[in-house]
Amino acid sequence: MIGQTKDAGFQIGVSKTLPFPPEAVWAAVMSQAGIALWLGEGATLAKGEPYATKDGTVGEVRSLHELDRVRLTWRPRGWDHETTVQIAISASGGKTRLTFHQERMVGPEERERQRDHWRKVMADVVDLLTAE
Image (cartoon, rainbow, N blue to C red; front, top):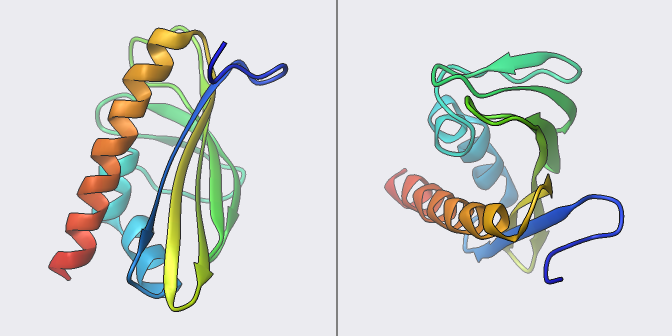
């Protein structure tokens, strides 16, 4: 089935190459305004630490590598399971590729909902970057 892996359930990735240096993209997605866009308001991220947003999303930061990636568990309020979300950046030719990846989703319907979610998040991050 499309988007289904052997070990990680269903997964989705949304990426975009942006005309900004990696430092600017990282600063945007890791700022309070950026974190509010992709994770939710009120979260503070530190490797190995739990986080909670004002709207009830909870999880734990599994890894956080400056100018590279952050990987965390993600369980919005009302969900009966957690998934894993990774935000990564990579630089090439003066541009930066930003990727949102989510795995361990339970089925194709959730995968499609999350694809729409991450596409909207990407558009919001682009808006944040172009407003700065």
